[in-house]
Image (cartoon, rainbow, N blue to C red):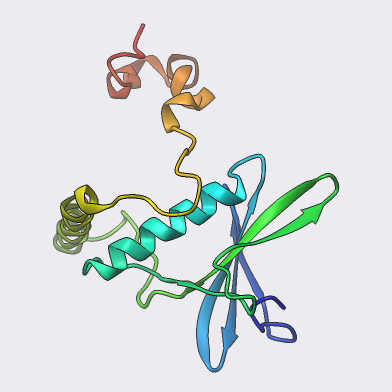
Length: 166
């Protein structure tokens, strides 16, 4: 409702780190994302969206965030003593990437992915931060990374970060 989607057909897509839904507004597809406060604070989500907006303004193709009716990119909703931060994005055109492609198509995927990462890295040094909280959970702190040797078979220990191998 904060984005005028009440009554729209909202379709669940997936749940992993976030809860992702799709809906249409004015005939255009949008993505609704809920992030639980145990995963990211509202300030961290705001900082992420400000960074994505910065990239979009510097010719990196991104799915831009859509302001709510209150002109906010993030809305927080209390739930049972915690909260979710909600954000809506323009839905990017195309299909979900898969690694199960024929070699020529897979090469194109990796080339395009590399070009996108290069564009992001070229623009990033000009970023000076925004209003949101730029502190973000660092993947190295994840249990699955810290204790990779416990989760990975011995044959795959070579893929662990050198500083974590033990």
